[in-house]
Structures are given as structure tokens and as C-alpha cells.
Image 1 (cartoon, rainbow, N blue to C red):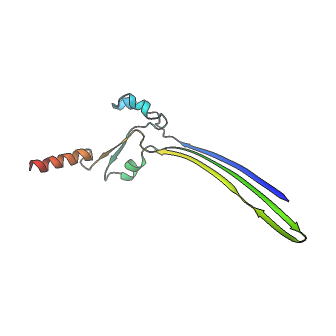
Image 2: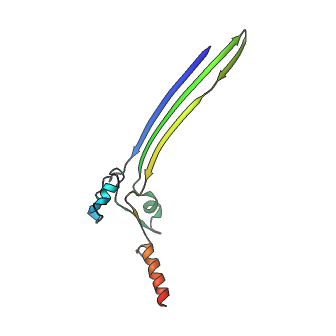
Image 3: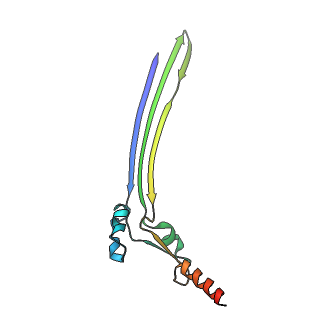
Length: 133
């Protein structure tokens, strides 16, 4: 006796921020940025002010996800019956494909230290103050 099972499953998942398609020229970015960042992922830049809601501003951003998952299964089997004895030989072949893309900060992120200035600017000021003595 011969048996054959085959299956296919597919799902897709999309998550886009409510403010996707944000026009970056409205905040002073060059127009080329709008074409460089796909509309589905283009959101306002994500601010990150350290020690002030780090777990909301710095890590979350405006998340964009696209996921496509496909699975193929093929399971042949053969059964040999001799009187009251059964011998079964079977196998399963599976092919899984998962295409996943995610970004939280496609338009960029800006980090600020506790002083409200960008960290690189604070570091530069500290270095210059050390040099001047």
C-alpha cells in the first residue's frame, strides 16, 4: 500500500505606522530623502532622550514589518502487510521560506544626552574644555 500527503501553507503579515509616508521636507530634510526611504517605512525621525522614557522613545520608533512565510510538506509512505504483520516506511520533506523585513527608524534616530544636546556635541565640548585647560 502506498500513501502520499502533500501540503502548502502561506501567510503574510504587514504592520505599518499610522504616520507612514511622512514628508521629510516638512522638517527640513532634503527632498532626496523622500525617495531614498520607501513610503511604507518613512516616518518622522525617532528622538531618544537618555534617562527620559528610554523604553518608549529610544527602542520603539515607528515599527514597520513585512513578513511572508511559505511552507511546503511532502510525505510519502509505503506499507507492507504480510498476514498480521505490518511494516511501514515513511518520510517527510519540508521546505520553509520566511522573508522578514523590519525597521524601527527608517528615517533616522537622534540621541540626546541629559543636557538636551546631541551626545557627540557634548563630547566635543568636553574635549575642547580639556584642551583649553
